[in-house]
Length: 376
Image 1 (spheres, rainbow, N blue to C red):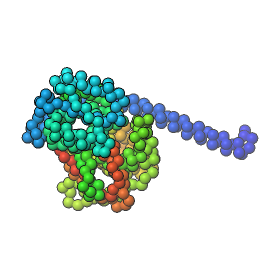
Image 2: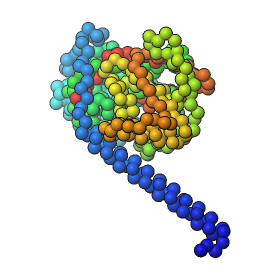
Image 3: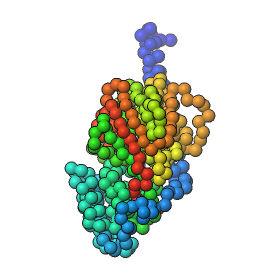
Image 4: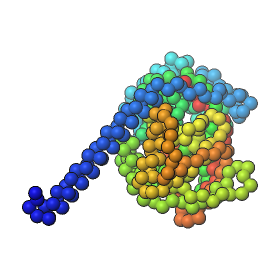
């Protein structure tokens, strides 16, 4: 049938490559279908009921009336394509809500908005609106902890995970602005990370982590995110899969002694939703005063990661994982503080998607109800 043995093997190799190509196409189609199903599922989900506002006794200052000292809008100029449209919409929304003309202040590259937030608080702002991605939001919020000043969020960025978890629209400036000026005041938790026992404080509102997620975030450039969006994280994540697991000791608050663990990544979650309804850490609630400490380990190479991804996707679709995990483990415990020490080389650490360096020791703590944030 074949002219020679070489032709025979050439035919076999061709068939094998064709089968591989068809398999890849099938996987891509399945992923797209699952993504669309996730979108539909998320749109059908009820809005999360969040904790009411802090009592005045919890804040350091009495709440201010809208007209008392006005509103500051701290925005990341890199993330706003049309500043005139943005300022016009926000000003109109503020006026309709009874606020005077907002004071618009761009973030400074040196500190990402921290000094702007402190200036606004010292000036007696009655409301501070932050417009930017999760990085800008976490820095501004970290500077406003326990001030009692309500914070409005207008998501402008790639991930906007905090806005997703709070039900703030990420694709409608008018709706997000309306929530920022007229939404419900909600008590929000604030996390803190310290690397290698240093004094520098790194606040977070969504998820902090070390290991695979830190490697993935560190390998994603801002330029690539602007061009590919979430695709940039996928490309970086594929490269990060090659890193070895971590051998570490973990001690949670109220634990008598640390535990030895093996993990690909270790997460400290205040929020649990990623995107399109994908709940990476079910039960994580940014208003309940707890963080979910999640340990993820994968064995068996790519097969283990595929198993883990399928379990997360199944859960997001509302289904149940009826088959026991074979090549992946994911366990979660609740705590308000944790101490982590790695046995080997330093690994990358991230907070709300921002890489903050590598470390062999972490101190993580949650400050319950440290912020007042406007939600719908």
